[in-house]
Length: 308
Image 1 (spheres, rainbow, N blue to C red):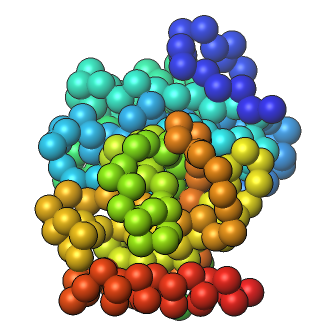
Image 2 (cartoon, rainbow, N blue to C red):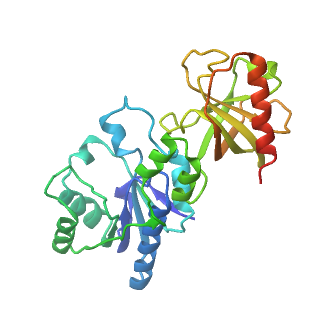
């Protein structure tokens, strides 16, 4: 089980091998870097320490921006724990930490507090206060001064695709959840809980569950209709999920997430639920009548029921 440490003053500063990052989404590139860190630690006979942040650094400087996170903090920690590392140090990314230069961060946090002997950096990762002249060679030079060997991990590609959190976001922005899954190494997932809606889906013969995401800053894929799997109460169900403004029904412009669970009956209001995106079925569009909308939903459901 991974030890999660929030108070760095309480750490027994044993020598360690570390890597650092926001680890948003825990994609294949993150996993490859963590595996490289584990290999190097095993060669040295030292434990592994992951260094990350309680909140994404971008949130400190712009809290009004659109949702961009690829997972909630809870899911991120679950996926980090699944990599098999010994411990994870979670730093509070506040203005004091943000004001540190890279050398100050390496000296005060990595060397003195954590006793890092070898640091594995992502191919494009930067830390410390933005300084245009600081690059990978700078980190290596600082490390030599502080007794930390700094190595730069190779960029991880999946075939011809470059793997990064930004690339995952780009795929989701156009509704390409299949490419997002290829980059992540798993299907993109949204956790939330079921809240009351207008019950209009029931009137159409397809009662839907309105989902309120647990993490309000998590990125939603492009508006449209998706095949998903829904995990609830320990069981998996096929479903059809709509992200959008329901133009045929309301057209109010308020974005909602509504799920129809196939071959399921029961009251799930208040339940926790996790949906994983399989594929995009179609764009959201305005139909001429409720009958046309109902017929299209029936086609969507049939397509999902017949899929492998």
